[in-house]
Image 1 (tube, rainbow, N blue to C red):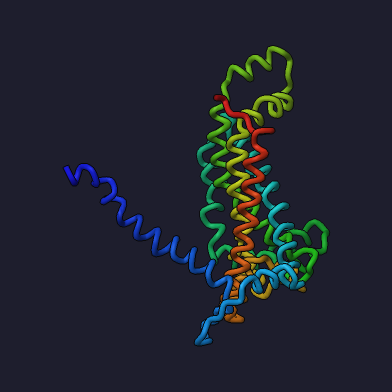
Image 2 (image 1 turned 180 degrees about the vertical axis):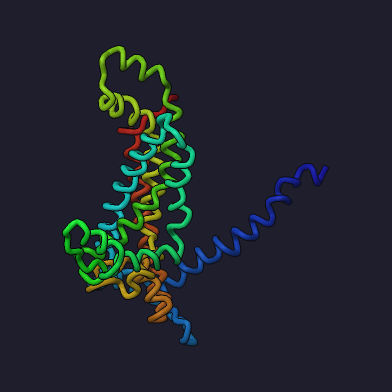
Length: 290
């Protein structure tokens, strides 16, 4: 009887241990360090209160990184969702080799976050890279993508948008769940395909749009691999210095772990606030059948 009563909890023990050791403890420890001057190479750690947080909002370098991160997220996320929905809509039609196309379009989501793809991306966009070679074939002088502040952001935005596969799969599943009789009724009423898309398709898949929006915002604000590997030092004149790069620099280059933890918590709070706003707004635009 004892085993029957606690059997589920016993099976959960490995997960609970992993959660406490690798999630809960580091989570609480980083919060504590954010109020200290923690340094790996300093023997004593002093409590400094809100000093790190005040510095985060008063230092020009950090506020600039926050603005760049917001700009990156609010450009990347809509583009990625629009592109993913567009491809999903096309792949929802009965066309030859559709499963092959779905696989091909999904592959970037698996490979996109890897170091190898970031290195490849850097090679593609360098001054004598493939992108500029292709542009030269049509008579366009390609810019210095990696050295010009006006184009550096474009490089990492395109890299992120290219990884639209995971959002596309969810959109595709949602599109298949839209009742066919709605389209039949709209066709009888004389509605065009465009009108059907915006009046039937989009409203019916808003729950999936909402889910993708929240998850993609969270991912965009935590972007690190691509910008770090392609630009390393934050790009020309710091044009692609996202907050995640500053967190890394403070923690492992300047050895200011307290400051790094404070900045990480600032980003956590920003993502949490944006998520709360998104959940608060869903009653105005997300349609649930029940």
